[in-house]
Length: 501
Image 1 (tube, rainbow, N blue to C red):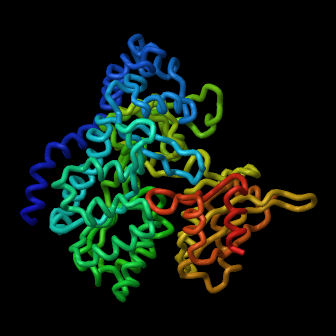
Image 2 (image 1 turned 90 degrees about the vertical axis):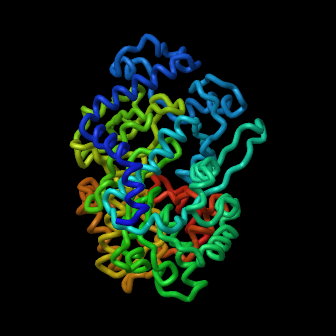
Image 3 (image 1 turned 120 degrees about the vertical axis):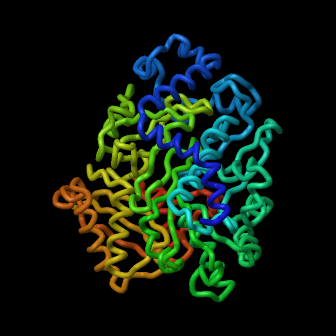
C-alpha cells in the first residue's frame, strides 16, 4: 500500500463506517433524513403552504404534500433565481443546475443549495474515492491527475448573484483550489462554453500530464479519446497515459460502450466504477466491481419515495417508502432534498436488485420509452439488446435513437432504429434481425406485439458525426447533454433522418 493510500484510508475510515451503518440501518437513516428536511423546511413559503410543522409521519407527508414535476415549481425556482429567499429552502441559493437530461428546448434550473453541494454532491465524490481506496488499496490512481469532462456556467441576466450551468461546471467552480490541482486541465479550459474548442484544448494540454483517472459521460469521452489517439498516433490510451487505471462514469448506460472501452484501454489493471450524480442530487455509486448495481446513498440529505410506473400520470399517484419496495419492479424516483425539492419526480426509473443492502440499476426515463403499441420498451431493454448483438457480430455503436413507425391503413407498425456505428456490422439485415429477436427475448410485451401488430424493426445507418451535428444545431453539443435514446413519437428521429439524407 502506498503512503497516499494509507493516508486516505485513515481519513476515510470514519466515513466508511457511516456507509456501513446506513447499509445496516437503512429505514432509520431515511426517517432521520426526512425529519431533518422537514424541520429545516417548515419556515419556508412552501413549508407553510403545506403545514410542515403539523406533519408528524412520512405517511402524513405522502397524504398532504403533492408529487410535483418541474413545471409545477418553476415559478418558485424563478423567484429564487431573481434573489428571493425562503421560498423552497431556508438557505440563500445562488447556484442552479441547468438540466440537460433531454434535448427539449425548454431548460430546467435545479436549485443547488450550499447544503446540497457539501452534504450531497461533494460527499458523493469523496465517497467514490473512499470506496475505491477500500476496494483497491494498492492502486496508484491518487498519485496522478484526474481528467474530468465538464460543462460551462454563466451569470444570470436578471440577478448578478445567481449563476447557472451544467452540474459539472458548478462542482468545478466550487471545488477548493487544492483539489483542483489534482485535476487536468485547469478550470479555465474545463469551463469553456465552445465544446469543439474545449476538446482541442483538452487534447493539447493533457497528453503531457500523468492522467490516472477519467471521469465523465462514456459517449462524450469517446470523442476525447479518439481525438487524443488521432493527435498522438497511438493505438490505445495506455500508450498515452501508461498509469491510467480508473474510469468513473455515469449519465448514460455503459453497456453499449463497454467493449469499445476494453479495446481502447486494454491494460488489465483498468477499473470501472459507475455513479449516479444528477442535477438534483448524488443518488448512488458502485461499491462492488463484480456487481454493476449501484448502492443507494441514504445519508446525503435526500429522502426517497418510489412510484410504481403504473401510477405515473395519475392525478394522485401512490408512492412507496424504502421498506415497501420489492426487487425486480420498475419505480419512478421521487425525491425530497436539501435544496428544497419536495416530493419531486426526477423522471428516472430504477429497479432494485437487492434490499439488503438497497442496490439498484437505472432502467430508463419516465418520458424516454416506446409504448405506441403497448410494447413498453424501456432504455434498459434497448441498451442490453444492443450490447448482446454487438458482441455477437463484432459491431460497435457510437450513438442511437429509436421511435415508432405508426400504422397506416392495411399495414402493421414497427420500430425504426437510427444507429451510428464506429464499426458497422458486416450484414446490417442480419444485425437488425438479431436485434429484433433479442428485444423479444428481453421484453415479453414487445414479443407479444410482434405477433399482433408490429413488423420486424427497421434499421437505418447514420453517417459518422450525425448525432453530434444534430446536438450542435440545437446548441446542446458537449457537457452533459444526451441524445434521447427512445422516444414515443417521431419528433427527433424525423429531424435526424432528414439530416442523414
